[in-house]
Image 1: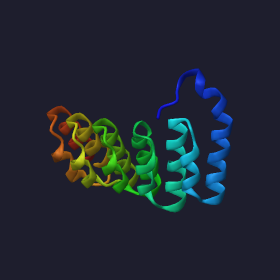
Image 2: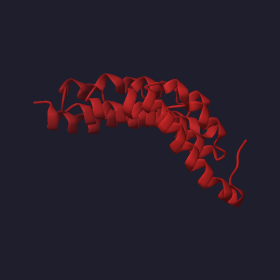
Image 3: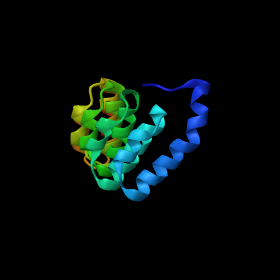
Image 4: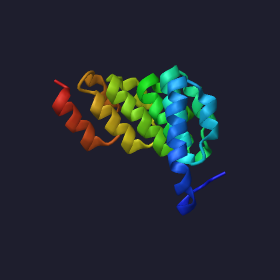
Length: 149
C-alpha cells in the first residue's frame, strides 16, 4: 500500500523511530511496520547493509526496492545491482561499482551504450585495454590518447 501526500505526515516520526529500533535490534521484521514506502525501503536497505544480506531488499515496497538494492550494492558488492528492475538504475549501479572497484569487466553488463562507453572510459585508466571496447569512435580515440600509451 502506498501512503503519500499530506496523510503521511503523522507517520514520519513513528516510522523514523521504527527504523532506528530495527537498526539497533538488527531486526528486519520491525521494518515491516513502517508505513511510508520510501522510509520502509530505506529501513530494509539499512538492515541489508548491516546484516550483509541484500536479499532483504526483496521485502521493500516495489517502488523503493531498486534504491534499496543500489544502497546495498555500494556496501555489499555488485551482485545486488543484478536485482534492480529499472534498466537505468541498474546501469547506474553497475557503473558506480565499476568505478569504485576499477573493474572494467563489469561495464559489459551495462545495457545503455552511452553509459557503457562512459564506464569503459572511466575504468581504462587502470587498464587501457578497455579503450578498445568503447563503441563511440570519438570517445575511443580520446581514451586511447589519454590512456593508450
